[in-house]
Length: 464
Ligand SMILES: [Zn+2]
Image (tube, rainbow, N blue to C red):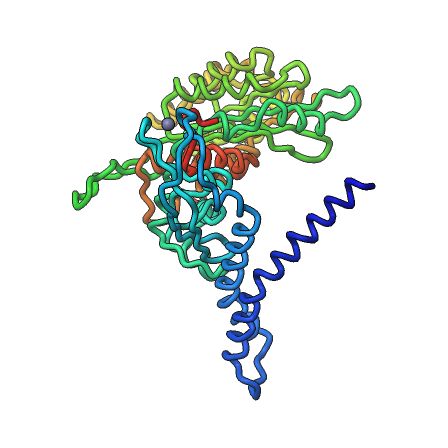
């Protein structure tokens, strides 16, 4: 009881002190509000809200500054501080002023600055405590503006941001910050931790029933162009494949997302990335289903990373191939062609792949195009024979189509990446993909934290 009393008195003290300190700011704000509308005008709600939006920045920015001055008065008066590098006691050289802007508005900070001659290193201890950014616009603004630009083009992001928050930040600033956050956004941070994945598996488990964990891989083609130097003509654009995977859990009637990852990268790197994610998944607690479109390299990596996975040839890709033959052999949408498609799909559904292949071999090709399509389908089915068992998949609760990855692809790759006129430099495109994956995976906080650690004003050299 005694302790609580002491704490309360102290809190009341500092609270009262703060109240006292912002009194002037309140007065200034009130004056400003009154000045705007005089006594005789009857402002509408919208007009009132607008003036609050316009004027609160100055008011709240000053309040925030006052709170810092009150809370950290000891650090503001500090005469000596240990050097963060060698620990030697250093004397204050001078007070340094920093103009900064947070979501609340502009604040100014005058704090002691120390210099260690042995390390030739200048520092302000308060900057570490507050985690102040080297930039004028602080981490809270940086975090939200980068998040905004992961949804809309940079120029538009700056407009929307200003409209909603009253903060005018240039699209150049957003773009630059975006690059700095996106560059160190590694797979390790973008993919949820083993602990988090375990939680999601638990959520999907009902009784002793092990949930199905779907690993679906696919590619999406993105418009890219080579990096050009300033004033240099842009190079010729080309379409490059973003290889990616999505991992999700099938629970009773819903899908629980686990992880998405897409990058413009080669097959080898794709394999490395998939294996890192696989190492975070307790594979004995789930029944793994591997979904793919038939590309050999993809199966190679998926089966290496998930050796016990049930391999399922994506039903929709498979059907697409069948339609190609029908079109070439019987003509587009001809009744005979459709009938053949239907009976072929039906046979595949019952895993009668051998029969379908035998039927294809007996077919008399109409022309060379048809002959080529028949040859391709025969090869495709032969290669993927062991992966066609849709009826059994259905019965066991496994998926037969990768609707899941197609929608993730659409969400992650297409909506932001394929805007008309957008050509991506590979590096920037990959940064965008990483941040969008992080948002989708629920790991954007981790990604931003990594960036923040390396960009604080007096970032510890050991990054602790
Ligand atoms: Zn030192």
